[in-house]
Length: 310
Image (cartoon, rainbow, N blue to C red; front, side):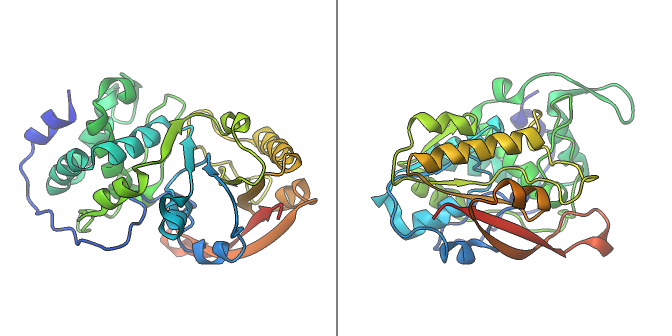
């Protein structure tokens, strides 16, 4: 079944009335996104650099902000290991009107039943709480359908979390979006303009190593290390990101540093990360993250660190 077939089976019950805006901003939310830190980051980031690389793209807050400052005077190379995310970026870049049309149709039909029908399109129900993987949406849906679905689920799931289980199934429940206005005005078109001359690839972060040169700037925003030994790493892809991955990333940064490449790494301000990057500058920030399913525990202040070699 296609996304368009599901849409036809539901009648619209709200109107798309997104407000137009003048400044580009990320078209998705992302756990650990940098919107609330971006101005403070700009005080630290280098003012002079050649090409810009962001291989843990996520919501792209840093890229969109830098593009608003430098425009096409810089070359930008964006990538991520999340294939759905990368396809969505490229579809927004090349086909914003098509994605917007389909996304708005989904917005107009949004309710709990519709959410789970869209979310569960890639699985077969085995029992009340068990599903079996059916097909890869990246290979089965059209790019337009995949992007609209990805953005719709991002806007309507619990706290915009992207999480897949071991069966490769996105398993985040619906959030508090039944009365929320999440329609878009001209946002997709603005993002398309920013991405027009930008390369967005599906690849691991190490793939940029052959291309970065002295004077380039690389910003790395990996899944964060846990704040305590008992906490779990967040899994944004089925592969996950564990302690050994954090150590490999640090080795990668060492190689960038030796080649004269400027880098900045965001992470949790835990003892493991502090020790791992002890030879580099560390800038700490207090931020509020709204991730806990318990309302009483949300918006707790946490410490994050920005590690730099400049």
